[in-house]
Length: 162
Length: 215
Image (cartoon, rainbow over all chains, first blue to last red; front, side):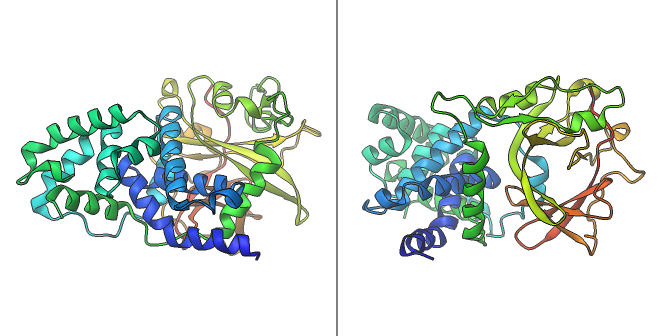
């Protein structure tokens, strides 16, 4: 194992699960999220020498994985039923029952809006979100506003916090 | 933290896996890809053709897919060879001869066509690298049909079985689709394949071999 492989492997081990969680939260399908993140890491293998010098290589992987997710959504309308069934259900407890309405509202948001909300929830600035999703800043703002409008009735507090 | 941020974190947590697949698996997938999938010429035309072998084996009427499928056109083209089938996934499948690696095959997973009332079935179709040689395929196709929608297209008397027991001589074929891994037993490979959760080798499904295709 070379030092290069080791650095890449450490990033993989340390960020894979987190990235799948984020990409899954955006796309709504964990199997698809795992595929997208794995594809992103495979792509990273050929670019590790340059990406490893970035401030945040994980953000690069996340951006590529979210892009892969979009590609897959476009190309494939039908999920892989067998794999979904074989794939173990998430073992992490679901949201508190009192938050079910909000969770459902997140689920029903258009995926593009959900991506903005999730990335904003991670603390990313709007410009960073625009870069990560490869869309103009104005698009990010409008998607966030639409998402807030949809979620506001369900919130007990100010949605502008996100 | 706001209420919405809590909900977002809950959602992220619900999609976060407990296990991380081995890094070596990614390396292998990349290696396979460099060998086959992305072997396009500088002009952007695939240099390696894929010829569907299953059809020569399976169809009673002798129907064959026409000509090679260019990898550069996949995944849409492979499904396009069959009326009504919809492609779900595609991957590469290392093959062996006498226990030694002998090549790589492609494999596509297609959803069955509605015109045969088989839209809830999955058809795993192998595709061989390079031209057909002797007409005897090294691999066969398999059908996932939990609803018994297409029993006439499966070999053997026992259709889809889940949970199934892996035979003692079963081993991984090298084909992985997400976290599912295709296992083959040398004793019954012409009749069945086994889809196994590659994380812990649990959740085994047995798929019957294909006797034909819904045309």
